Length: 93
Image (cartoon, rainbow, N blue to C red; front, side):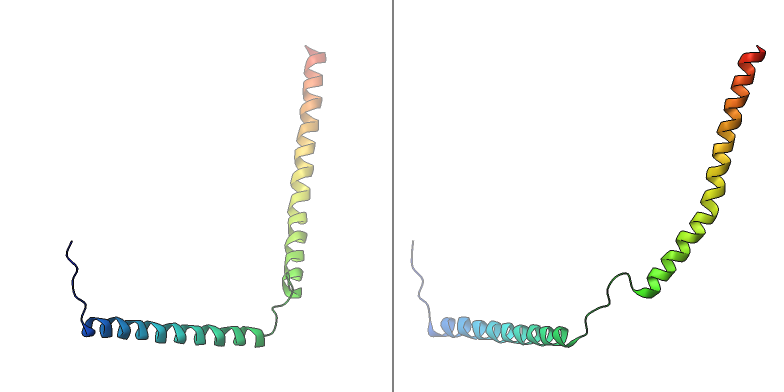
């Protein structure tokens, strides 16, 4: 294996690339620091569910109760009718 010689220009190219990389990392760190400061200054989000949403959900629960109760009652009534019909069929047969 032959060793290649490294010139001063090669070293300067590497250093210029490293310097550019360090500058970009510094810009990134500054931007992240500014975002952290901005987030700390922002007010905390409201507790979930917010009052408006809680009222809205209550409306949905009430409307669900309005249609669910008659359907359940109708199903129970159909089951009762089925039981009566089967019982009658056994006695009439």
